[in-house]
Image (cartoon, rainbow, N blue to C red; front, side, top):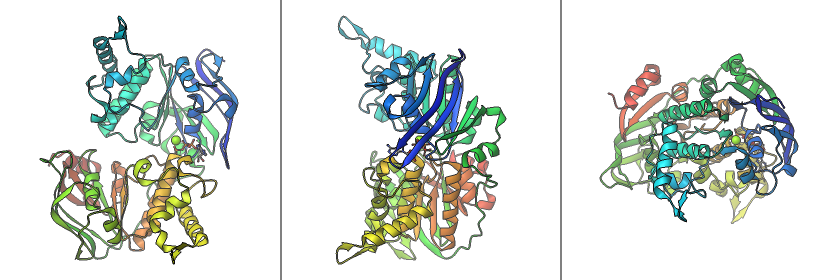
Length: 508
Ligand SMILES: Nc1ncnc2c1ncn2[C@@H]1O[C@H](COP(=O)(O)OP(=O)(O)OP(=O)(O)O)[C@@H](O)[C@H]1O
Ligand SMILES: [Mg+2]
């Protein structure tokens, strides 16, 4: 292995029942570089990273991996062994202890001691030093659960780099971060690189790929399509390598025909359950028409999610205001009430709210709609399967069968299952909270196409999104929220990124 390489991966094969997750995957990573890995949902990215970080052992895959001049042969206690060798991974799901402080987390299991006791002042001053090294403005004594998800993610990276990390793997690190936090993370990766640490960076966000990586490997269906310097790709070629075909447009064409008002929200004020003095939504008034895609934009923490969850009867205490569906007032006190009134919410956090991970794909899709297949308390199993198949196909869910557990699906395919479930319940108003988070470009386009088709059939869609591009590309009207207040509702024709941001930061 050449001296300038830190990692050399040769012919890795890994299968799960019914799936070949990696097929002869072969590429190498330059020492001190930021190496991007791109590919569609289910391409095998996370599986490969799990092999490198010791989640899967040497006898669970075939192929040869050289790391830092030696063959990597991880056996029992492999995760620990990988760390000792200098390989660290930060998963999308956080792994910090919520009730402990930042410092306690960073030094967990390797606390500095003095005369047989934990030396707290050294622990916190060293934490401070590490945080400063990466210009992270975080209090070492803050308890983890009081920090935003973004800050927690940064602590996780600081923790990984506090040790003797040589290779840091970041698997979709920014999918839950705000714009500002993403900037900080990008800078942190640059600092790591200048300190000689190699990074493998997995993301579905192409801007990040072009900003931060030196080289990109593209995986498709478990095989490496190509590895090239980032400068040799364009947006278009990167996408076509990933999806295996040309994609000329990012958003499908649409010719909206708007009908009457379906949902009207009037002077809706909700008390923040964590702070009785605060309103998480204040005096919100808006309406959504039949066949409309109604976008909701706002910064992370602006109250977008709280507003719709409150409408859905799942959050806060309503202080005043009303919700009308088709002109009739609806007292919605729970998600069941909301569904009966014709709404369906696809939540932001699919892992904890959208899916039952230990259940099959089939059950995940059909459970909320079981009455469709039931008569006299019996479920028509055949009809249930056929229907689930139709909807799974509609959303292009990629899985060996509908009987496998949802937990075995790649991130993006889990999201498609949640959407399939929503469609089956056939709501009048479908509410999507950041529906394409963690979803690859090709699958995003499929979801957008579905949205267009559904609205053509008369469904109304409310879509919250952190991506202004997506909001602008898909919405008929855009409501901008800042600090729990509706600032404005714009027609898509009069909106652009600057105007939305201007309202979102509360500058108007
Ligand atoms: N524990 C498992 N059991 C069964 N199949 C699995 C398991 N883990 C992954 N797979 C399958 O292996 C394939 C690769 O999954 P992987 O999670 O590596 O994809 P990915 O490229 O990370 O996708 P995403 O962008 O959606 O995160 C998928 O088809 C997935 O369903
Ligand atoms: Mg993944």
